[in-house]
Length: 499
Image (cartoon, rainbow, N blue to C red; front, side, top):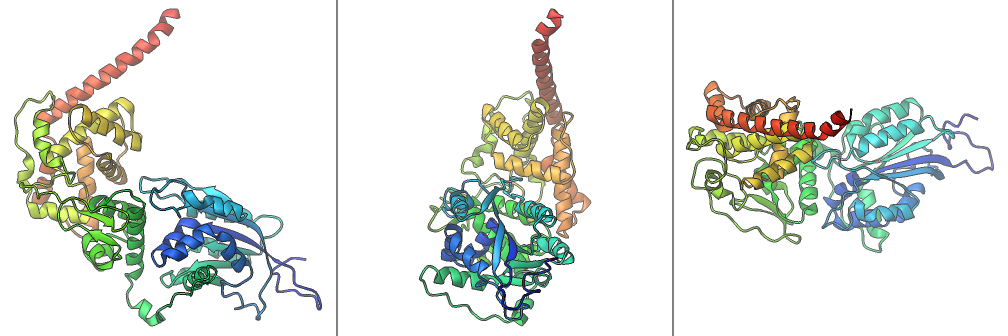
């Protein structure tokens, strides 16, 4: 018999055969969704999967009676996989790294999806899609696919499953895209899951404020706002210290994408800081003076405010970076020319606009140019490996008494690479600076801030090295390349001699 569905062909007097079900869970997606709404529900979901899995199979969580003629099917789970990020998060004892054993004890196959990017994007969704596509051809035939994720990126696989006559069940909240929920046969709503998680623990179900569909549809930016705030909450709660607002905005934009952040003008708020001030939970705090930080009241200590830099030039927000120029003047360099910091020629309003739009590191001109120099030397000697290049650049800074934050280097390298630059041993401080400048101009254009020729010239003064700096950087790179070649020759000498 070709089993189209376990409830479609019944023999009088006989129990219907169980519906063969495959369950795929994007742990981080569900956990973060619940965490933004109800911490107890999120913790109970993570630590007690047996209870809600049993309810799901029994039809107690979803709209299972709809479309089945009132019959609640018997399900037999032939595959159960949970996908999550195994990286340890110091503060959150309910994150996947700590609770994966609970899912193993509940009979799940645990699929670790380590981060693929420096923004901790782990690629669970694509792994799930590939596995579902494999199980579409599986024997015995899978009758039903349960996708525990509210991510609308699963729309294509839902279309494919429907075309192959498979039933589908998904997880969805009030903000889940209609294009996603309309394709599923059944939905596990966020309200139903939260209520069950409370009731199964002997707690009264939380009251849910009624919200009409008309009210939901009035603000098209709600989805972007919710996604940004969820990502901010996740990053801050996972950190063991307050998080720089600059780094936070960069991470959120790179993880969620420009369409949700820059293109929506930070969900209609114009500035990232304004969005956080208006939409972030009261559990979080924002500093109103440098260093601009975000922290959790219960998890972090309030950062110590730092005095505003007296210069009109952007300065690094680390506590000791207001001494940056003095440090640079004492460093060993082939360039003995005494020159002043050129960012005085870059108008402050222009810098403020660019920092608000791009969230690039707020560093001085001289600092940027020294940083590009260090990066070029590192790439020439050791090649380009994203994290390693950033860490080694920071170590090179320490050697010349220049404080370098690896996260700043990663941010710069990411923007250069995002703009299409391919790192190679021919890179120098000028080529890296030009690629970074072009990425900033491009990102400003994406935010409808078109720089004039005069403003682009000011940008050149901010990022590009002077002629004397270029010569000094070229000499240093040539010296490194020569030393590297000498080491390589010395290693091969015994072999040549033996030959």
